[in-house]
Length: 140
Image 1 (cartoon, rainbow, N blue to C red):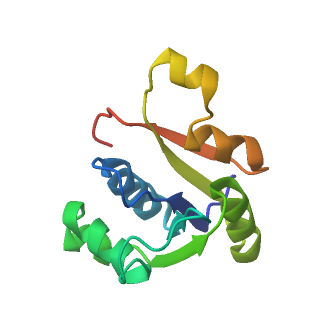
Image 2 (image 1 turned 45 degrees about the vertical axis):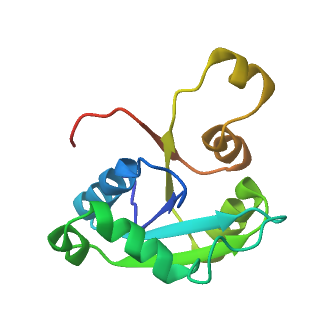
């Protein structure tokens, strides 16, 4: 049996659609896992505003997730500054993460030929199971 004790969701605080984070919470609840929400800030950028730390992740999540759902899962908030994929790999190793969940946004074909999307960068860098949630999803 595949045991999932710790799940990581790399959250984008700038995204208008963070519904995949709610789905990740539900998956953590159903597995009985703790979930880590990690925000990785670009190495060249400053923090977007003074509260861009764990409390900003918590506030963003509370905009879309019910208190009832949040109370059923052990949630850990973390931030890092650096290249997204590198920071996710490091965080997973440091925290014994079993499963990574990423949201996927469908982008125009030309974008995919020129740039790797953040979810692809994470998938390529990890040696862990990764669950990809589409941006347009049905309820789980």
